[in-house]
Length: 209
Image: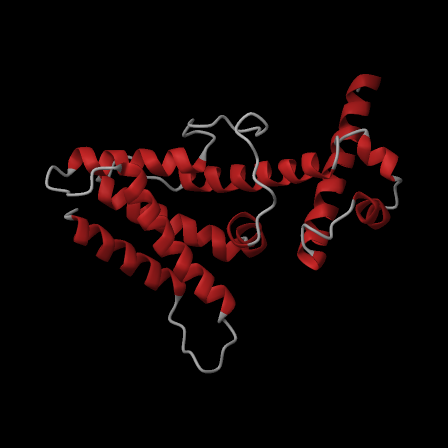
């Protein structure tokens, strides 16, 4: 291994260490109270070292957001079955979305419940509108296919359809996360609720699933 390769590996490892520490602290204290000094203390480095890899706290938060969204996008794409109908693909999308929330609850909270400051299109590592990198664009492409495949559908705006779908899923997931230990409510299994709500929503739109 050359000196340059070794230095890059060490730099990447340090970047990973900083991001992981920032994730932990965000869970503990929230984004607003997060400081680079606290991160430096967590990993036993000076803040000067962090500044060699990130311009500021906002730059670090953008890196975390980019990673979380990239992971979500990869999961949605990996589980997508292009051989089935658009409606069935949307059901699969819903199942993948809830899978992400259940397997990565802190990631889900960080993206959708307690998000960092918005990342501009220009600052994001993902290409806006590219379904291979942009989870929203990927999901939107499925609703475009639903509209194309369903002449009788009344609402033909894929963004409106996606946002109704997304809002329904997010509501169910949020209730599950918030009321999970609530003794007065008998929560039903989240995957069952999400799939049932998705199928009901699609049938209400006139989509055969």
